[in-house]
Image (cartoon, rainbow, N blue to C red; front, top):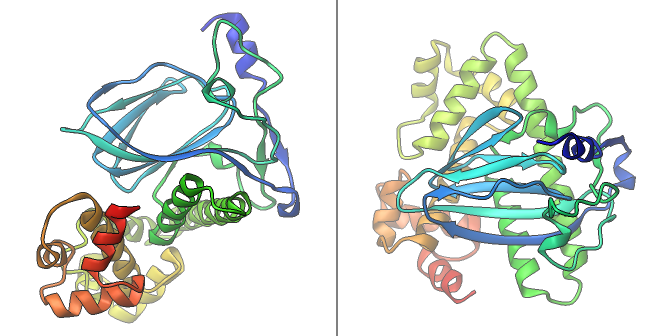
Length: 304
C-alpha cells in the first residue's frame, strides 16, 4: 500500500452517537452465488455486511486471514483493503448489504461504493456510528447472526429488490434492527468469554449451527457440558438470549428455509436433514414459524 493510500485509509472514522441520530441508508442488497477463486483487492467508501448462507470463503485484511463458513457474517469497514476468496466447491452463496450509518453518501453506482484507486476521494469514506455502552462493530468483524437477524437480512434484500412505495423506510427500519442484533451478539460474546462456562456454551451454540439435525436435547447438552439440566438451561439462556430448545428451533427453521429455496430435496428429506423424523410434525412446525406450509414456501420463493 502506498503512503498516499495509507493516508486515505485513515480517513474512515468513528463517531460516538446516540441511537436517535442513526439513520442508515441502503446502497445495495442482493444475494449472490459465486464460483471458487479470488476476487479483486479493493476498498469501500461505505460499509458492507457479507453473510455466507452456503459454502465457505475467506477474507484477507488487516494482515490477517478470516475464515468464513456458512452461517457467519463479515463486517467490512470503509477504507480497509481486503480481498475475498471463495474456497468451497462448486460455489458459495452470500447476502451482501452495503450501507452507511448517517445517510451521508449519495450512491448512484458501484463507483460510489468501491474506491477507484486511480482517483480515491479522501472525503468520501463513511463514518461508523459507535453505540453507547458497546464497542465498535468493526472491532471484531466476524459474527454468527441468529435466525432472526438472517431473516431480517433476507427481508431487506427482498424490499430493496422490489422497490415498492416506502421501501426506503422499510429498509432503514430493517437495517436498524439488524445492527441492534449484531450489537447484542457482541454483548453475548463478551459475556460468554467472561464466564467460566460461557465459552463452552458458545462452542455448543456453534456446533448446533453446524449440525442442527443432531440430538440437542437439554439432557444431551447437559451431559456434554457436565452440568445438571436446570443449571445448563439457565446459563444457556443467559448467553444465547433464549432457551436451548427455542434456539435450536430457530436454527432448524433457518436451514429448512435455505434447503427449500436452494435444493430439490423433497419436503420429507428437508425435514430429516434438519432434525425432524416425522413429515407431518415438520410441516406443522414450519407453518407455525413461517405462516406457510413447506411446499407453499418453496413455490413462493421460486416465484419471487
